[in-house]
Image (cartoon, rainbow, N blue to C red):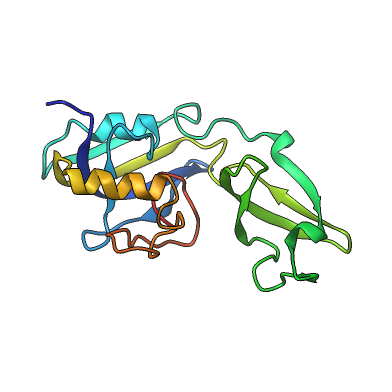
Length: 191
């Protein structure tokens, strides 16, 4: 079975090790599964490799080392930015920028990414650009709900999202990304 351009739908539980015990950090369900089209770099490569060749109905359990997942926590990705960066029409955006908020940011090249607000000071906002699961080994347990060749329409819809044709956000156009959870794991879900 060719593993490129496969439509794969899975339900899973994601755990990390916390002092020798597995702690659940994310759970999908059969009615709100995680859906990817393989070969586009949406999910972690190591996650995709583990599920892409599994048949519909297959159950899986696998671990990813921190290097296969989000790598080490990096101190250089903790930065302070002026409050003016987070101002709209001269007013600081208190509604979206507060301690522990996950906010979408954009660099000078137009690349979008997420950061967690660590602290809001009088003049600066401290942002952590590390993935929330940086430095962690990940343990997945789940089931493959669908695994088939992706349709041309599904690939076109994905390309529209990747190129910002829908504003880059789920819900901005008609499409099946309805996955919701509190923290962005970065596995490729829409948040």
